[in-house]
Image 1: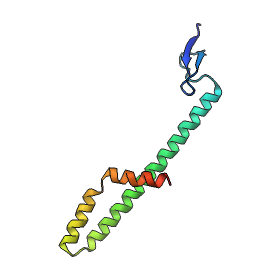
Image 2: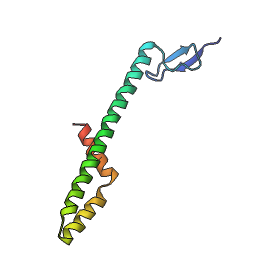
Image 3: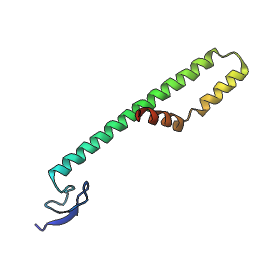
Image 4: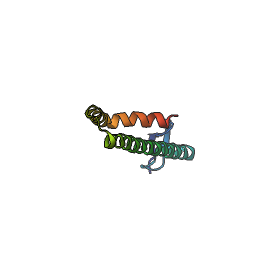
Length: 100
């Protein structure tokens, strides 16, 4: 079987692939790529947990204040705050929390 010249997906060095499905030039690159991918997934899971917690706590806080609000101006302000609680705002809070 003729060998195939490939570029390693991790280190970008040229290597002679023994199989057409080969992605990495060595076991070291394959293991390092797996660990990097696993670390990325762990960080993404942390971010997702922080996002959901910020969303839950933020919404619960606004809704709790809204249920006891008696002043019309306060109700309108809390309604506006609730509408402003966008996914982008929650994402910014979550990113800040994960990078601490």
